[in-house]
Image 1 (cartoon, rainbow, N blue to C red):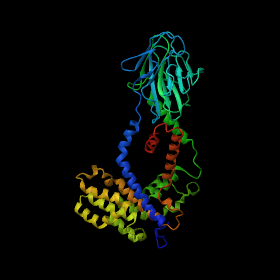
Image 2 (image 1 turned 45 degrees about the vertical axis):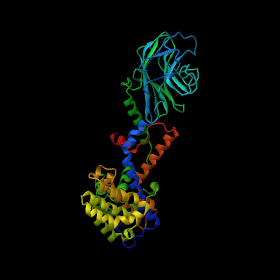
Image 3 (image 1 turned 60 degrees about the vertical axis):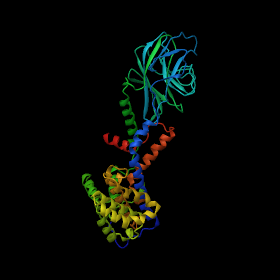
Image 4 (image 1 turned 60 degrees about the horizontal axis):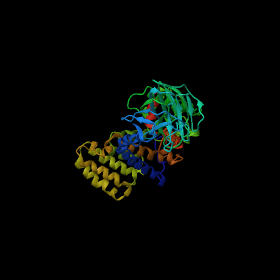
Length: 468
């Protein structure tokens, strides 16, 4: 489609909201910049992992716990089924991760080898083996059976005895309990227990003794490899989803480049993919006609390059020449972001006096608008720091801020296309809408699992896909 002409439409109220959308995106990015490191730390800090055995809540009359609270020994002679020496970890299993796992080393199987490992709820009766009561699951060493909430076991794996290392884990992605013996997976079962679950061990005959490893030393089982395999399973499930025949990955990438005006990259992409077909349409699946985002491609490319280079005055000039309707209202969100970027560029090059003058002329009038006030304050705050890039408002000096402004201008130009069916198509490319849908689905899946499993991070998912 040709560049803009006299037939381009004037922005209406809905189109003006596009500028406010990117203003909110800018403010949201500011919050993310300031909290990014904090989020990385708190994700794991929110839940404290088990580190030792809970000597307060245990069947203390039947077990002796070592001073480091990591070993337990049965010293009595058991007379009946309620003489179990059972003990939980001091904390429940963390849930905001892909997998939780712990191990025991059987130092002595004692007289009968009635040792078990598993998970129990906080209200579990501390005189019974894990799996013998509701809200518990346990793998027992004397018979190799798995017990899940009642006294009848089910065939599961081999027995274990002195010298063996046995592990128990929760795979939150698959919603399964799994157990290991000497570094090998024994088996897994559906995790039908809800609520906080405590790592639990039990001993039940004289001289039985086990040592617990909550991760204070390397596991016998290769947990990292197991996690990698689980992530690969998830990736394969995604790849098994068929793509409609009229939508290819190449078309999706092409629509992204078109949407944001990356004309040179688009040309290189077409050459690399040996594309000789005419403009491709993906309207059936996405609701977006590629012709809509081909509109004013060269103009959008030029303006993006100018803004990325910090040439805001030239950008204003081009907009007044090509799309005067976008900048005729100097109080619009689009004009505001451009004026802010001009101020930021002056600070970037150290022209502080000129920045002050520009701020007094162009930014001061925006201070009376509540929607603009926060960003005006952040811009002005740049003047207060000797090293503004290292300050709390340093996000404004990063190239990503230029991209926000360039995206705003790009969207506003697309909105002037008289053939644009819906203004919301100006905001994001088809690829980004797919990623938003992926994010929503992953978050919903996690919600259905009781918010268990590692927090969804799109960047990590994309990184793992590239490595694959």
